[in-house]
Image (cartoon, rainbow, N blue to C red; front, side, top):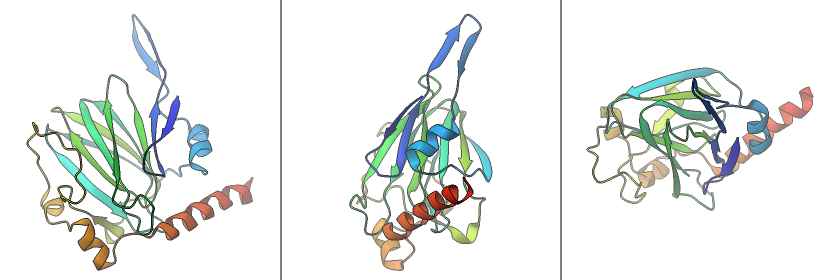
Length: 205
């Protein structure tokens, strides 16, 4: 597995080594110790989700209060999609910037989205299935969103895809509106929580 940190600190792309023969393909799409080495602490598994979407369905930009936030390990098991990570951490040197990775069943990449980052996904084919490993269970009182079509963000949605958003995502604030409302996580809080998670590992070693 090759691991590459993306342009947004705290986000990583994982490209597995695929072993193919006449029977099909085998690969490791998740290795806990490799993730821990890159991130600085293990991904505590609390919940696993799968979404299946028609072409054009856009989910996000979603994030959760930090602490504890909600780290995500995301891969595509059918179809193809564009996964986008946004730095919404107030005080971060890359605040308001984004990076994107195509997830599909060809390269079979995965992405790690650290606590405090915004996350969105666009299905590029009908029947696109996305699997999420989550560090925290869903807690609606801690969940928030930023509008994925915020022109200030300029996220890279393809022009030839008709976008379909949920009512909740359509009503989400812009990044600046979310900042003014005080709902965005701070970079310092995210860093402090990451340090706490790493310390927990040392204390139990």
